[in-house]
Amino acid sequence: GLCGFYPVAFARFAASGRVWAAFEPATIWRDLRKVLRADYIQACTIFYGMYLCVHVATSWIPYGGLPILSVLIFYLFLVFARVFGTMIGRAHAQPTPPAQN
Image 1 (spheres, rainbow, N blue to C red):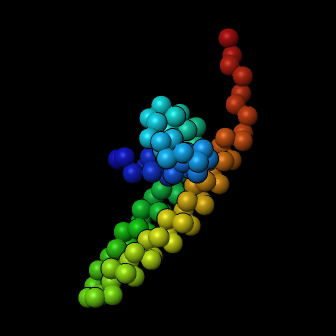
Image 2: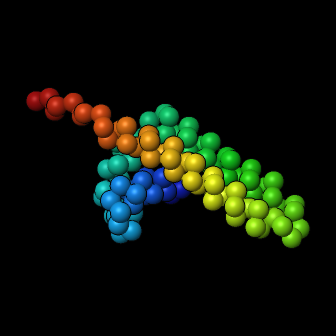
Image 3: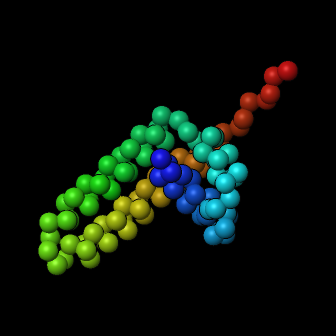
């Protein structure tokens, strides 16, 4: 559902340096329409699959699971922020074709 918006919202925040930029629906929707391709959907699927695997893998550790989970999720977000930022940056760098009349 809405989890597909997270990478675009994070990238919007990183690009503008303003927290509120991550909450502007029109801007996020425009960015999402620009980058929504097969590679974006694959990256989202891999990200949320790894997110789920990290949760499952650390859930059986009694006392150390939560700190380990926190560190692993932090690094997972860090890596995929870079991946999504690169993808979104490339999508914005491509020139849009002129409108045909």
